[in-house]
Image (cartoon, rainbow, N blue to C red):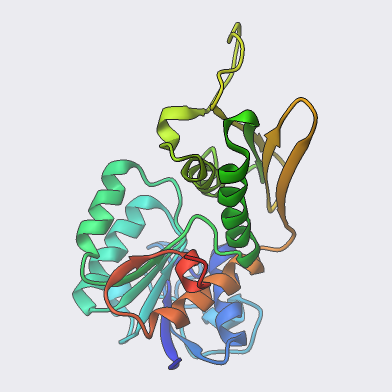
Length: 268
């Protein structure tokens, strides 16, 4: 695996700073560029100092086009910004690691069209543990089938803007895949009032938002006699940053294509 020259967009944000830290801890990646939105008080600051590590000599700029040549761009921002960064990546012939959630179907299609020739990893969650859990959920769904009612629970901090989380939806997709159905056909995203009895085969979602919860996800398979739970709790966001940096290094040896963290970990 060769060393990767990395651009971190949104580098002054909570996740951006952790990405910079994770890259400095990596043996085969280096931060060469960092950005923040125009007008931010952090433009011009050193990315390493903001991240609480050594001075890197990489100052935040407000235009990604001002960044030097790089191999991969890591983006944990917002859908509209990610689409703009994708154009930049495609123009420069780079790879891209996308951790942005909340993209709608149209935005996803735009991303795929723009990055059709680029090596891309896009995952709802970059935690190694979560991705192992996704594989376990699919296998459990295959074995248990519709005889067990299925529910997905997730909890996040009060600042998270999308619900259910991308990881919760990924769990639902894994569960649905194990049953051989499409998630959209069986998902129940809210319950209120006289909902009637639960339909066999439904996959329900429950959401909590509050405080500083990093991330909790649980898939439940519930029968009259027993309940099986596959649970993941993140206690530090660095787990996501380290996974994204691992994906960036893995991409350096890949040709154009659309990958996820399961590919990075060899779980597919």
